[in-house]
Amino acid sequence: MSEESLDQRVALTTVGAIVSALLIATVIYAIRYVTVTVPARESAPAAATAPGERAFSLGTVGLSGDASRIVLSGTVPDEATKERLLKPARVLWGRNNVVDNITVKPDAAPLWWRARPVDVLARLRQLGSFDLRTNGDSLQLKGVAPSEAIRGATANGATLWFVDQANAHVDLSVDNGGGGTAAPSDALLNERIEFATSESVLPEAAKARLTEIASLLKDDDRVIVITGHTDNQGTDDVNQPLSLARAESVRTFLVSQGVPAARLQAMGAGASQPVADNATEEGRQRNRRIAFAVAQ
Image 1 (cartoon, rainbow, N blue to C red):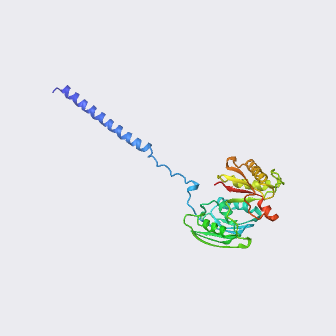
Image 2 (spheres, helix red, strand yellow):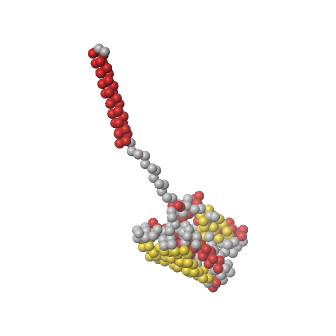
Image 3 (cartoon, rainbow, N blue to C red):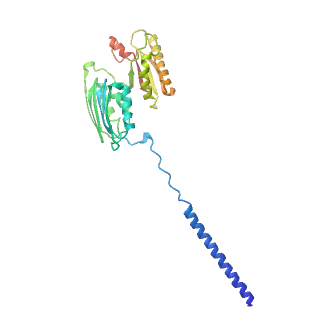
């Protein structure tokens, strides 16, 4: 082989080695670059728990009183939880009839019941007196019911309103002094509004109270039925449409206060659903009312 050919082969071999080295270096660099600059794909964050999916918890609170006054006590973890109890209590009993002894402590047990506080409070208010205590995984309810029907409905509800597995101790007696015939009511609130005789125009005196009710209903995403009731004075042909017109007046005002119209329904029951004896003036006054209930 000539010296020139040998030199050419050496040169080609050298060039090939250099090219191979460059290719290897390029690949190594690319791998390092990708590894350093491209972060690993992160796993998707866990979805936030929806309010309806929160774990139920009894909390540590006390609710005691009767149809005219309520005392709220215990500890809750934040102001929002406290307000969820106080707001419906003030609407149902009236602001001046609610005693607030609730303390906020960040390390207090959470409170999240199966039933909404307004529903529980409305049922307790049907008792002649009540004393409800929750603590850890147990609850105790003592009280006096005006009838066996209300006693049974409340005792059954106490096992369903709060948590899935409540260690419930219920001690309710019955006071038949009022006749013992009162039936459990699904109404959240029975409001007496003094309409003028045979009129459906909403009186000015009722608007402040209805404004408070509106503040509660705006926070409730359920459909609420507003039902007008009358006493038994007059005929059904007059009382039924009159009761409906009064319910419509209340509905119109609540809508003007910000309650979505789609969540309010008006109905008229006339004199067909009395809650008291129409034989007395006091009974007739109780029967002339506007009831608020969750649509079934």
